[in-house]
Image (cartoon, rainbow, N blue to C red; front, side):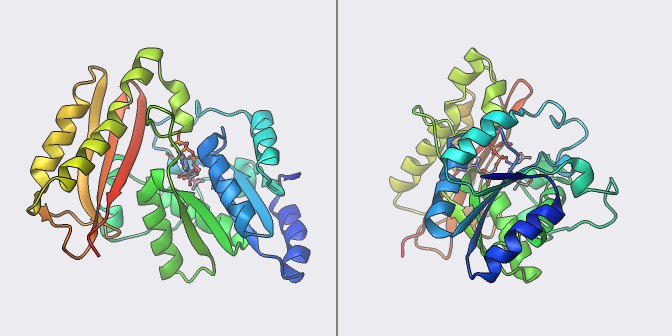
Length: 291
Ligand SMILES: Nc1ncnc2c1ncn2[C@@H]1O[C@H](COP(=O)(O)OP(=O)(O)OP(=O)(O)O)[C@@H](O)[C@H]1O
Ligand SMILES: CC(C)(CO)[C@@H](O)C(=O)[O-]
Ligand code: BAL
């Protein structure tokens, strides 16, 4: 496994492989790798000839009061995990390498319903930061396939829209959310949780399961306000939990609806953002329509 810090060196490593007709699979991350990241690398290893991992804590996608400077970092451990999971090249750029002018002179904005709700509202500018860095990384790596986790389902939708609208020649591969045994979605930020917060954080996945059961047991169209109330009441059983949002919107359109029927036109995504102290966790589940 090669560890590369500059754009020029990465391009010169990838060009000959591409010319030999080898497919490139790309897993962009912010590091502090866990089993969720590993599952993306393994999926890339199965599907692509060359697996590229990037580790870059992107300042552009953090708000001024967010955790950019304290975001967990452990490069040596990350490299060992990446190697074991079959990465061929690890791209570890500095902020100056990615943003020679900071703030950057040119950015990418994704518009429409997908960036009008949920994390787009709670984290203003976040998806511009994500779209900008991912488009730069796509231009640098020129992958055939890029792998993203569905824990960040709205991010997947934003990137898919960007890829469609700006004609990137990459196939986005969404990968399922990997969870702890009790259901908590794996996340680099779980490390911030105290023991008490960690124990209570199980309410997120439990609330999603409740939502699924509620829909499965309903014969009629679902009243979304009622569904949201059910989820929120369950989350509030955790005394340390503070709800940022607990929403249910169409998927993949991310459009608000008052009611939803499994016999209707689209799937439903139930999406949560919950704070425990300064730690903000997200999770979601997709409830499919009947086909
Ligand atoms: N539990 C998970 N299962 C599958 N994929 C995941 C999981 N957690 C993160 N990913 C995916 O890994 C990629 C890199 O994410 P990132 O490095 O931000 O990790 P993270 O654990 O989501 O960190 P954060 O604490 O910032 O939420 C993204 O595509 C993300 O969706
Ligand atoms: C896609 C990404 C690596 C862009 O910085 C980040 O948003 C993440 O880790 O999900
Ligand atoms: N996992 C998405 C990256 C972020 O929270 O900034």
